[in-house]
Amino acid sequence: MVLTEVPKAVGFIYALVVIGVVAYLWYSHRWRQWIGWLLLIVSAALGFLIFSPVAPYQLQQLALRDVQGLGAPLIVGATGLTLVLLLTVIFGRFFCGYACPVGAVQEIAYLAPVPKLRPQQKVAFMVVRGVFFVIFLIMAVVFSASLLAFFGIHDFFNLALSAGSVVFLIMLLVSLVFYRPFCRLVCPYGLVLSLGAAKSLFRLRRTDACIECGKCEKACPTDEAKREDGKAECYLCGRCTDVCPRDALVYAKDRPPGKIQEK
Ligand code: SF4
Ligand code: SF4
Image (cartoon, rainbow, N blue to C red; front, side, top):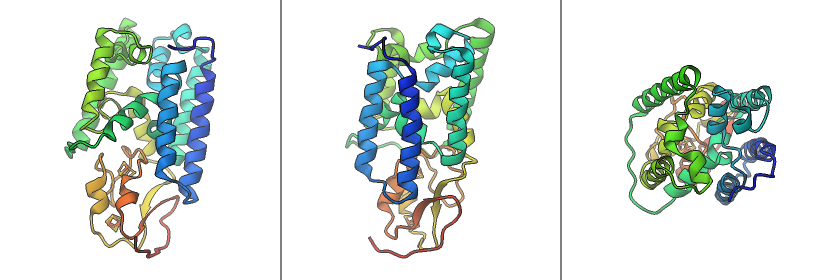
């Protein structure tokens, strides 16, 4: 049941705090996986309780110029979404990784101990999301219609049964085996943030300690762990750092000097 009396700004402030805190913890080598799981649970709960910060929906309402659905004046909504983009250009996709309820429920589903599908079709997935983005814009701007209504994130988090919420439920079931299908194939805000993350200042970088064993590449669910990968689809999930036998991946601004440390 969504608590309508709680200002949506609470979710936005939560998102800014999460980005700052998680970036600091990664940078200072204090990040622990249990912190990530805790944040995913809180973010998913915020989706159900106050339906915020669900940025893809807020981008949709902004495109529709729907002040009531946005929960804020258009300029405030646009400023908030731009601020998250700027933080992504600096720190990477911590918003998608840990603060967005839509990403959180998919990430939690993917933690299920079942066999995973990892098709290495990164470019094809980006093309699909690009096509959805064009459709999203045309529907909103030309026809004043909501593409995301078909994917049911509003109804799902409001626990309302509809064709859309069933579609999202199916995507959530797919998330058990395929990493973040909504984020990687559909989300229009995810596309915007992936463009920002591709240029991010801080990101996971390999040190000289790397022995090219390839374990991080096998563990990465988005095919972003190779040395030359742009990190547009890196959600800072930590699967690569967890498996690296040399602690050769660090979250840093510049390529750090090597440190050899057996795990
Ligand atoms: S495994 Fe590493 S490179 Fe891949 S998405 Fe997670 S943090 Fe990013
Ligand atoms: S798992 Fe570590 S040592 Fe192996 S290739 Fe990746 S960064 Fe290098």
